[in-house]
Length: 201
Image (cartoon, rainbow, N blue to C red; front, side):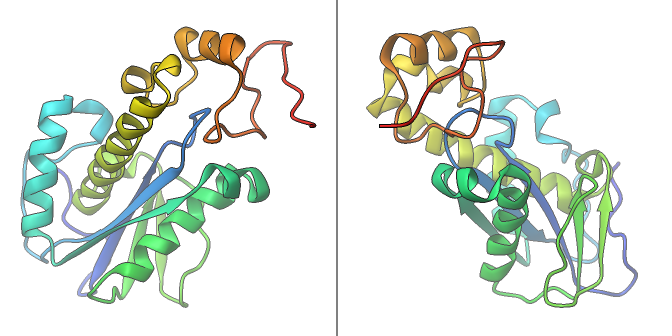
């Protein structure tokens, strides 16, 4: 059973992101505030759950949460500010949208940028330790998957419906054959290994 909270007697938002390691698409982050006495034994790191279970839990989280929101940073923004800063910005954008203001923040991982002078804690593997971070990981993952599925309709040659933008062999083969899309992160090594692409026009 994951822990309910990190800070005692504070309204706490859990944050997590999805899509940092992808070659294409926006990075998504979610922020979730759960009730103080909330207990859901099904919550876990989204990577440990089946796709079907993630979507079932998304509905439950959205119904049960005091507040939740999703923030997005585009591939173009990622290229300008780098993926770490983009991930932190996506979390801030999610926090900005919460209809209930948090009094503290807990974040999956070991990096965060202070938000409105609120106390915060970074927790390595936090999505497997705290319910609100697990809930945020599920929302970020499922909303990003939905987004990549929509892009796949427009650009089926990259197999995004299956790989969600991650660097699979089929994805990289699509880049070799068809070039890059407007959604690719041009600051990344898109072909892997020693190969690179020249984006100068």
